Amino acid sequence: MNKYEVVFIVRPDASEETIGQAAEKAQEQVTRNGGIILGLENWGKKKLAYELQRFSEGTYFKMDIEGPGDIVDKLARHFSLSEEVIRHQTIKPVEKKSAAP
Image 1 (spheres, helix red, strand yellow):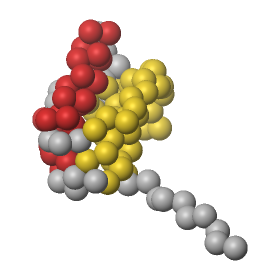
Image 2 (cartoon, helix red, strand yellow):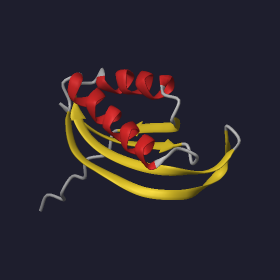
Image 3 (cartoon, helix red, strand yellow):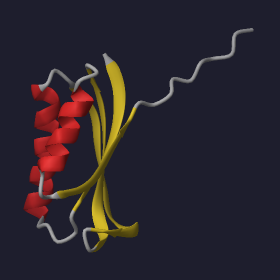
Image 4 (cartoon, helix red, strand yellow):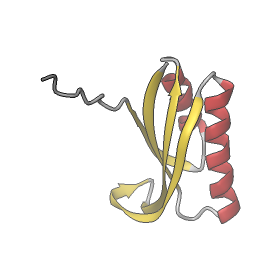
């Protein structure tokens, strides 16, 4: 199983309930496809570097997950079909190797 960091941005005009549902749906998608949620952080509403879909800000989430390699594609498909999520990115963090003496 691989570890991934997923950052997604929810549209700023979404209600608190909709924002919570978007986070829950993302978590359900991970667990449904054999993954494990290691952590979920709501970074709050922040200004975007550039306009996305006529929005200049959005609510950021960071989710740490562990799962099989195909989970990335399934999660990307979920986000692209979601109306609430305006941007997402998944990365595989680099494992830091300790220096051997």
